[in-house]
Image 1 (spheres, rainbow, N blue to C red):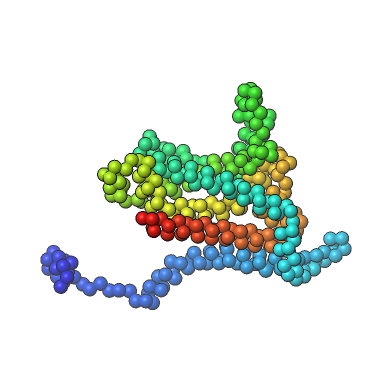
Image 2: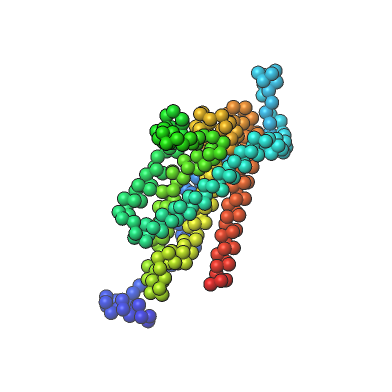
Length: 321
């Protein structure tokens, strides 16, 4: 009789009943019940549209009679993909989006991680209030946030630009040099607090015993943060980077609104705007589907590179340790 059974027998006076293990059939049934709703949503919301878009990308629709006749759908092969890749506006939009990612992702990840470390260290007064204040901008819908910042960017309307002009400072947030940083600022304002909350939740799960051991070993607050806390939340950082990159590739709302006040933003400024213009302005669903599939491939490639780089960094860190 095991020690646990002995303790239970001593307390109740009866032998502890044997634990009944669920059968494999019941386990499979439980897994199916738990994963069923997610699987259905994944298939309906993601897999079916992807397969349908891939199917449409191999066809083109032509209209006879100067565009007013009957529509005829023909198999186009890879001509839609060749047309997208040969279009300078699509290639330029991908370049602009990659520049946006190169500025936005490091700023939001590093900034949120620093804020989360400050919140976790206890140096911030009124921590719960600070978390709420940081999270509030994320609760504002993206289109509303874009309208607010568009008002602040517009000359003649913005009180910020008016104050800068009184100081003899001319700043054009909608100009060529500051256009992409202005878009980054909007996204940073909306996403910094949300990302901070994610990192803070991960930091709160770090065992306090490790932090106490680091303190006993003489590690200061900065060294504890860099050598203990950050390595333990590496998986969360990688996940945040991956989803941030995917979200940044889908840049659409902010440039679409800012295009109303600046000629530098055209209807094909980003890949998502290119897809929208091809589908709903030019009614070329084959071209729009091909661009969508190419954008999906870019998302998958960048996600793979992020996860691959993170796994190598983790392996290298383990070897050094």
